[in-house]
Length: 192
Image 1 (cartoon, helix red, strand yellow):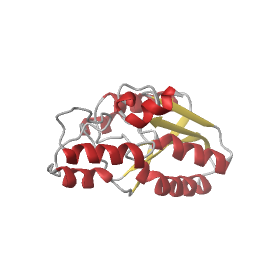
Image 2 (cartoon, rainbow, N blue to C red; image 1 turned 90 degrees about the vertical axis):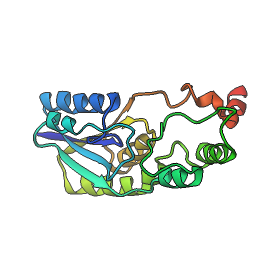
Image 3 (cartoon, rainbow, N blue to C red; image 1 turned 60 degrees about the horizontal axis):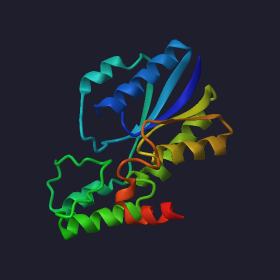
């Protein structure tokens, strides 16, 4: 059976619509003769969890979980949030009532963590993905599903290094997303 390397940050126990879509892709690919090898993170920071979704994953799906740098733990400490607080990751606070710590944290996030706060997974994701491709000659395709869009950077690097075809699933736009214009730097870039 042909296999594909599927790169995604959101995977059970994560819940929500993005995970539903990811599971559907894995199911449909299996129905069409493709077995998935999932590359994801260990102990992801998920806003929703749903362990029931494990039951919907096709038998034989291999999952590789890697460590990664999680900046939201620092974000919580810096802004005075509890470690267990769930942070809406796709939305940058642009409220005028946000405190200075929140504004500073969002400025750092918007300008240093490019394309997103998951960029800390890039190196370990690429390393693990290359190892999987090297050791499994049945992998014939690299597939990424994001956001976070870091997964697409990982996928592109793996495809370039391996020569395998690359498919991306943009669940949300990379640019022109609703919060894009809330970042002053982006407003300046867009004005050119």
